[in-house]
Image (cartoon, rainbow over all chains, first blue to last red; front, top):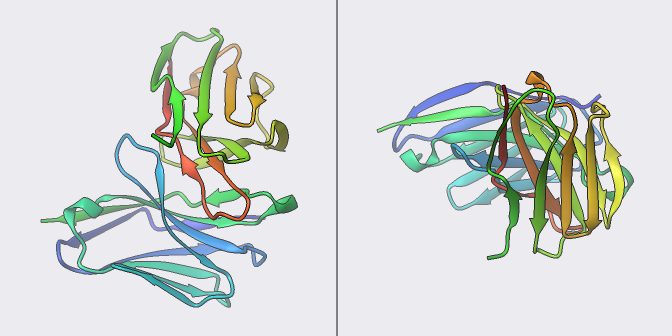
Length: 113
Length: 112
């Protein structure tokens, strides 16, 4: 079955790099996502990676995918206080051609000034 | 503004009542979803509609009934509300060929 696991909490100092890790179980996952949720708000898509890619970089964000180990990570360079939020890892199985996205439990990132 | 909008943002109601949450998207997306986020922030899919047709129906009590009058709207009606229904309900939409969801800002339902 589908399962996405993340650590619950990460604390970093402003200016340091943050690395949030995720593992998933379904080898048929086609797309892997990182979403950000700020307090009282909905989830916002940060970035995604196709399963045939190893790495994707987008400004301060770097996504690494190890398909063999089913491990996904999100690195945030030069972490800012505005990056404090909950980060959700997610996978898409695409049943019947439609997106069914399974989310992890979310990692709360606390940035200390 | 282009967005996924949900109403109401907050809903406090007594056990046993029936309530509805509405969702509208003006993004032209063809698929809409309802997710439930519990107090531990766990997100679980409930339903998905594609062009008014139900395509995902997870194990959800029969008291929950989605309705999609057109592809821009997906409403959620809940009968006989229970304490355990308290959660934040998120509507989302997506479009085939475009990655990821666009989420609404959520409806915080509190059953007392």
